[in-house]
Length: 74
Image (tube, rainbow, N blue to C red; front, side):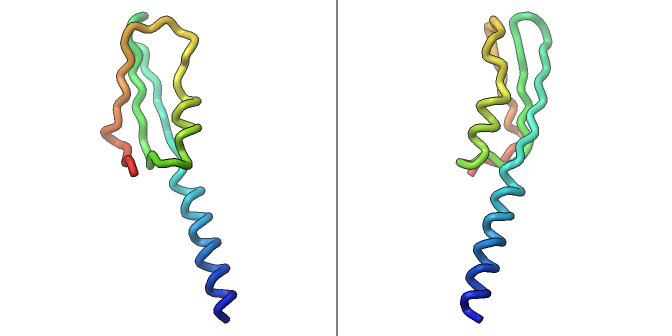
């Protein structure tokens, strides 16, 4: 019985991390010099890769705004 409880808790933790690691990032280009990224969701160690990959690094932008008003940082 204790092994079953342990496996259940472990699986629950894995599914929880998978669920909250999803980020939604919306990009807005107001003009050629300004880009705004709006981040929604949970930001923690498991979502860092998605966050870093969402930015467009090839553009020549002078100013970047990262809006975290709808994000929760752990």
